Image 1 (tube, rainbow, N blue to C red):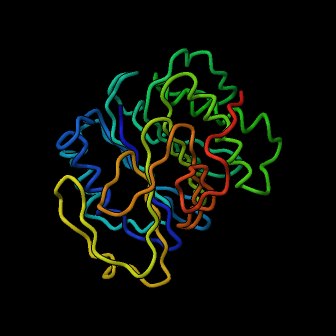
Image 2 (cartoon, rainbow, N blue to C red):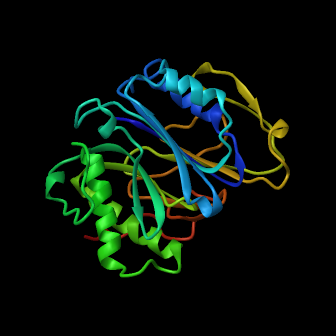
Length: 276
């Protein structure tokens, strides 16, 4: 399996400290040694993105060391460390995967394993590698494009539609996913995914895996709102754990929709309809 990390904020912030914690799990404190990737959205309305990938373990990759030393301010970040089960250890099989749709840059990362994924119709969206993950991403894009002739004016509606399709993919195996268009972040859980939102008053937090602490009050302003999503909690904060077929949607740092019953942002009944 792999591990995921997503960050959503209402201001451009540096995510290098939480990325550094994830990097340690990429071949040091965790087994995810088969490559890694991270995308930082930038520009007006998140229309641009800066992506770094490597097939070396994230814990010791020279590219990873460079990323950890740079602030790369961003309101939306996706990261992935890979423990390969489908497809070779190669750049084309390294997450996050990126595609353009409706003039926006979509990024996606997956943790899990799907059976019979070759049957998924990807339409005009062709996988570059051999993974079930990328095949599922291209299928999701095709589902969006064929269902909506033009992009919906309500992106929340679109993300909820994608969540129903993710529920179908979870019937094929294990499907934990992060997906973003640069403004919204969708997290879908099959087995492991948790999130936490940071707001003022900020305090100091301890990182897991024994990699130190972070004084949030020294880095954030009172009006800042930041949400983290991860396969496993990265800090000692009170994370909300998603359950099977739960999903959460984030916009500018806040969780605006969550189907988990135990979530402070709960708006829907837990679990969603499986739709194909």
